[in-house]
Image 1 (tube, one colour):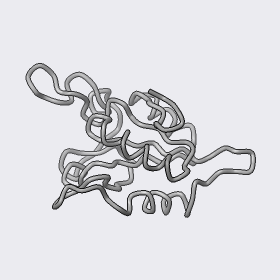
Image 2 (image 1 turned 180 degrees about the vertical axis):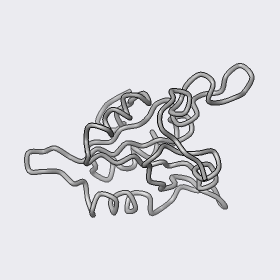
Image 3 (image 1 turned 90 degrees about the horizontal axis):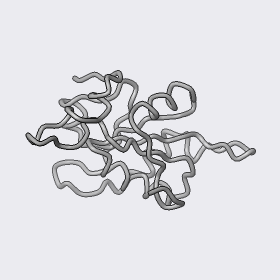
Length: 143
């Protein structure tokens, strides 16, 4: 669903294309630190956890940390064009929640990678087999 309270959904290829064609756009990976480091992450993404260990609570500084990436604010030009913020998590659910928080804080151009990095579970309870950034063959790396 797309409205003034929800980020705009993009599939992984659409997100990649937006990032490639707009040098002001940033890709924020909102997964936990362990996921980001050991499962892998999109090349060029910036890590800002939405929910992280050890307490698995929402990061109270999430919006502030993303605003810092945007040089302190929504980075909108006078004509109304804002720097896009593209969010990604494992399957698109946490990044949608994080996007709502950014929009409530006044950011205008917020996008959610609907398939996430690993996509949904398949019939064998495996990820990265039916969707996601990695499954689509987009650039990624791991530590």
